Length: 217
Image 1: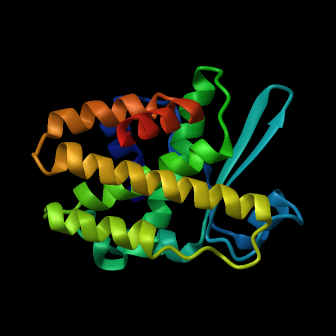
Image 2: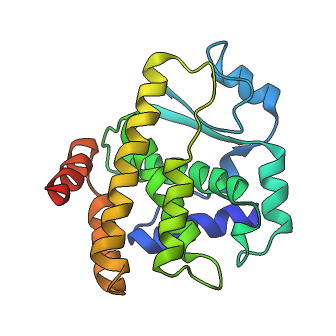
C-alpha cells in the first residue's frame, strides 16, 4: 500500500494541498465486499470504485482497487509506471478520486461526479507524463494524450447517463491536456504549468469547463 500513499503525496505536491487521511487506510481489495457496499446497481467487473455513503453528515468512504492493481504497484518501481500503463492509470484514478473528494469535503464543498472524473483524467495524463525517471518529450506527450483520450474504450453495459458523463469528462480532459501541451509543454514552462494545474484543481465543474472553453476560443 506504500505505493498508493506515495501517489497521494505526489498529487498533494503537484496541487499544493494536504489532507489528514492516508488513502491506504481506505483501500479494500475484496470484490465481493466492494459489490456489497456498492449494492445491486454497481458493476461487478469494475476494477476501481470510490464507494461513498453519507450518514448523518458524515462520509463513509472506501476505495476498491482490484487485487491485480495493488499487486502491480507492489512489484513495479515508481520510476517505471509505463510498464503497464492501464494498471498504473487505474491506480492514479482511484487515488485522484479519493484525494479530490477528501480535499473538497474538508472545506465542506459539494462536487459532481463529472468533475471528479474530469480531474482524474487530467491527473492520469500528468502522472504518466512526469512520474517516470525519463519524462516524456513533446512528441511523447502527444502520443500519450492520443492513447489516453483518442483510443479510449468505454465499458459495455453502462447506463446512458453514466456513459454520457464519462464521454464528457474524456472530451474536456483531452481538450485541456492539448492546451497544456501548446501553452506550457512546448516551451518548457514548468512554472506556468504548475500554476495552471493548481488553479484548475481549485475550480468546481463550471469553473473547470469555463477555463477550458475560454482557452479554446
